Amino acid sequence: MYPTVQMLHSLLAYVVLILLLVATLNAVVGSIKKSDFSLRDFKLTLWALIATHTQVVLGLVLYFISPLGIKSFSSNGAQVMKDATLRLFAVEHISVMIIAAVLLTIGYAKQKRSEDSAAKFKRISLFYAIALLLILSRIPWTQWLA
Image (cartoon, rainbow, N blue to C red):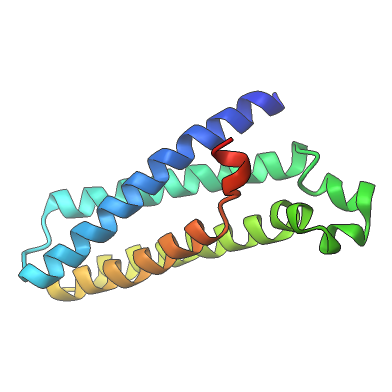
């Protein structure tokens, strides 16, 4: 089960990054061009949100079945915080990804409640960009690209 979930988590990460990048750039361009917030824009932000939430669920499953997740605390104790790789997987990665998902959810909800297109694009631009930067900051690049 662990290798399957890990593979799905790695593959979905590409989808999430692409969707978040496209949704963020779309919102920035829409804001600059003062475009109307269309059904296409709405669907793009929604798909980015759904993909990210699915990724977080897979990540939480991994956190509890992986030797690098919660199990690293029981097997390594306080050494987890002293080892950069263990700390990344056991603490930083999961924490930042959950924060990013919360920011995406807040941005999406605020966009839905906004009346005018400019406010919708502005909120998506801000919240999705911050979430994307947070995600990029805590991807375990050495493991992921290897």
